Length: 508
Image (cartoon, rainbow, N blue to C red; front, side):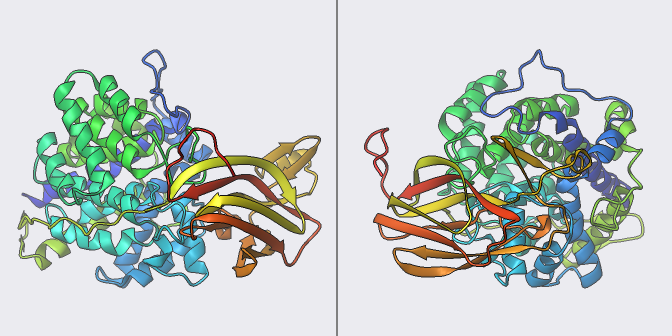
C-alpha cells in the first residue's frame, strides 16, 4: 500500500478509538446486565469531545495508557525490555484503576512482570485493562500478526494474565488484521485464532460468532444469549456476585458482537457497542479504532470527526503526546517494523509481509477458585479485625479512609463517603500517610502490606489469599502504625472454595 494510505489508516485507528471512548462516556457502567434501551438517546454534537476533555481527563485512560507505551518505545527503542515498559507505566502519575492500579502497586513494591499481572498477586487479572490499552500494538504492527503477539506478550503481562491478557491480545490482533482486510468476519476469525481454543475467552467469543449465524439480524438476541451464559465475574472484587462486570471475556464479546452486527457501518457499530452496556466507553473505543483502520481517517464521517479536531493537538494527561503526535509516532514505528519483518519501505509505498501466528499458550486464572459468597460487612476497624470462613480463599474489599470533616470547598476536590452521621473522605492526592497492615492466616503471619493514602500509590484491596487448603480458616488483620486521622473500611469479604456450592444457602 502507499505510505499515504498506511498513515491514513493509522490516523483512523487513533482518532476513531478516541471518538468511541467519548461517545460512550455518559453510559459507562451505568447499564450493568442490561442494554441501553432504544428510547435512550446517546448524545454527540459539536464541542462534545472538548467538553469531556475538560470535564473528566481520566475518561481517556484508554488513550493515555497506550501513549505511555508508545512514548517509551520511542525513547528507549522498539525492542526495550518489559521491565522498562513496566516501570514507565507504573511511575506515571495519572489515575489508574482495576488491574492497572493493582499492577502499578505491585511494581512500585518490587513485584515485576509477569508476577505483577498474575492472578495470585492481582485479583483483577481477568479485568479488561490490557484490552483497552492494546490498540497501539496493532497500529504499529500492521498485518504482521506474529510481531503483534510478541509485543502483546511484552506488555500484557505487566497488568494482566489469563483471559485478561487474551483480551488485549485479541484486540491488538483485530487492529493488525484490519490493515489487510476489510471483511469483518475474516478479521474476526483470524484474530480469535491466536487465542487457545481451550480457553474460556476463546469459547466466549466463538459463541458470539455462532449466535450471529443463528440470529443474523437481531443483535439483542445475541446479547441475551451472551448474558445468560457469560455474564459472571469470578475475579474482580468489585464485580463478584454483583451486576458490575469488567471481565475481559464479556466486554471483548461486545466488541465482536458490534463488529458483526454493525457490518462495517461506523455509526451503527459504535452505537451497538455502547448499547451493550458495562464498559460502554472502552468497547466503542476499540470498535471505532478497528473500523478507523479499515476506513482510514479520511473516510470517518465528518459528523464524528469534527468535534475530535478540537483536541488533536492537546497532550493527554501524564504524557507529552497528543493525537497529532501519536499519528506520526505509530507511523514511524510501523515503518521500522515493516522493514525489520521482511517487508519493504520505499519513498512512496510499503510492502508488508503478512504473517501468521501460532495460538498463544494456555493461561487460565482462578482455577479451583470458585466464588461461593459475598458477605456484607460495611464496618471500620482501628486496631485488629478477625473473621473466619470455610473454603480455600478470600478477598477483603475495602480501603483506607480519612476521618477529617469536610469543608464545602474540600467537597469539590475529593471523593466523599457518607456513613451514618459521619463524613469520611479519601484524602487529597498528595497525602503521604501509609498504613501498615499485618495479615495472619490460621495463626501464622502471612505478611505485611502497605495501604498508601495517595491515589496513585493505593492498594485496591487490603488483603486476599487464594488456593489455601480447603477447610475452615481464620484471618486476622493487625494495623501496625495506627493513626487516629484514618480508618480502614471493610465493605465486603468474598469467599472462595474449590467446590461448587451444593445449595444456594452458604454455610460458613
